Length: 329
Ligand SMILES: Nc1ncnc2c1ncn2[C@@H]1O[C@H](COP(=O)(O)OP(=O)(O)O)[C@@H](O)[C@H]1O
Ligand SMILES: [Mg+2]
Image (cartoon, rainbow, N blue to C red; front, side):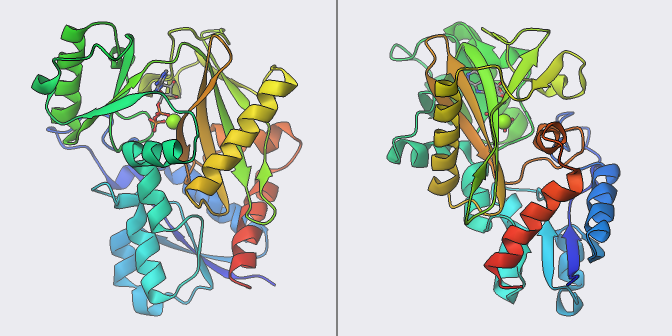
């Protein structure tokens, strides 16, 4: 039977970066077309959609939502718990919602915390350290350049441009200083993994369906070497996704197995996407899990059903059905 489904989200158009903020300040937020696509698709599946908007719109109407469940794709406005704000409010109110809960969302957004969990579970991830002050960077002997510098709790490639890969100590100090001051948070330094890049999409809880890996191609190359995905690539013709990835069965199985471990390690629910680099010897490293992957029609998550001959609606329905089943709806 059709349900009443509330939609919570953050629109790019609701948030204009201030002059003091970096130009990628609203990178995580969605285009109105994506919200309309999700709303229309949910309607086409026989449900009624109520567009709610961001956390403040949710709070305004909290006592009279009149929904069976919320489909939440809100990235949140500020702080490292921003993705959790809507889920914990819904949890407190006893309102069902699709997707992972507040703990999983906050843990995964904070790349440092997530990597600590990966290590505890024996999941390979690039060697790392956190830097609170660039001046403290005197002894990097135990690290192998090149290194990657990123903000500790950002997504959507925020803070990742062509200068994020670092070859020497001077550049490392400059870049960490830039990241700390621009994004107002610690910098995460990681060993740079030369090689190939993959992402693995997952849907469901019981059973959990792990899709074959998608490979990232940049400027016509599958062997990326020192190339990597930057904020600028999102809208660039240089970036292509290859699905299914042309790799050995052994590597495919390994990536799927690791993606499933990561999904379970952070208690991901209903859907998620795990990003990998694979070094030149074929060793995979988990970069991060996205429990709230971008649902735009052109983004990598929704490219997978398209290539498999599934529609956007069928993929969305799988996600919704996983959540309905959890709540016995
Ligand atoms: N340690 C690393 N080695 C090589 N490339 C990396 C590394 N960390 C990040 N990258 C590159 O930067 C991109 C974005 O990094 P990621 O950790 O996935 O953050 P985001 O949340 O912005 O997607 C990756 O897709 C990859 O191309
Ligand atoms: Mg990523």
